[in-house]
Length: 195
Length: 245
Ligand SMILES: [Zn+2]
Image (cartoon, rainbow over all chains, first blue to last red; front, side, top):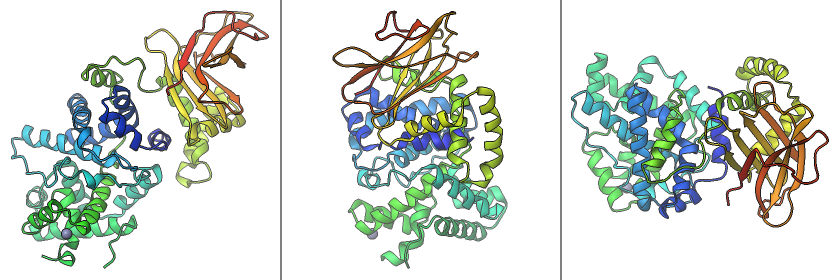
């Protein structure tokens, strides 16, 4: 959809830092503004995971309430709150998916509230429309298997062994796909770690 | 375990795929505030967020915003998103301008939208003016109208560029009458900010170019006036959009 990136770009322009401070003061207008800025992005992510709009809306609500209740633990830097919000959303959605599927809940590697400092310095423009287009292009360049592996991990919360089972491939092969995919994404996006 | 050995594991960690012993090792580094690992994990979480942002765009029902705000005990005064009628059409147009000449893949899209543009009888100059206001870094946005019947929309105010009003549900002005926009200072009399008519579908876009003292402005309003406009409002406003401070 053409509109989303431009709306995001416009809305993100004013910065999230003030919003976080206002959330910490429990200013409901700040929650409204946060929702206006990121509600669609959060919904898009969650509905991609759970594939049901009604359930997704419940989980979006849970996500924003969690942010509302836990903003105190967030370090209000100058950066974007979006990655944190998306991490909260993804955790909620994957928890739901796993419990609905009768699968064990994977211990989360990273509770999103565990290390507030981790989220405080993320550049405001991280999720601008150009970036999102670049990552989409980078995903399109992956081989179908590599791409599927990344999507199964991110959007379905599968471990590498679960992926191997789902894809009917040896674990080693899946691990190679994942690593290769991550390396190409990193390179394409210019986030390469110097050796 | 040293950092070069952990190097390939941060992104796996961020995606929830890290194996032992690296998983515990990274956790341990984070919990003692290891700067190297913090920086690497931050980068990895950014990559993960970007993957998340590739989910196909979807829209929740407009009721969801109210529901979320209500669950915090707050009664929202404003609606969350541009009313679709005005919003989709207008923002598509802005997107066309924004992307034209920048991205080949949007060329076709832009062509379609230009066609739409002709039908909307909004000329490109006005669109560019509107976009200048929209895209201004310090532009403030105010939403007005909540119920099903009254005019709804948004007011964008940029100190250097001016005021942009986008409305829907705005019925055609009666014969001999016209809509007039006002910039209302916190103290003193409303200043006339241009005349406009709504489209047949009840949408309207109105631009008042020129600098605005945003801090001194309390609201933007619209009244119905006789055709030549008025120096001061003579009727009850059909739109009042108090600026957020
Ligand atoms: Zn470390």
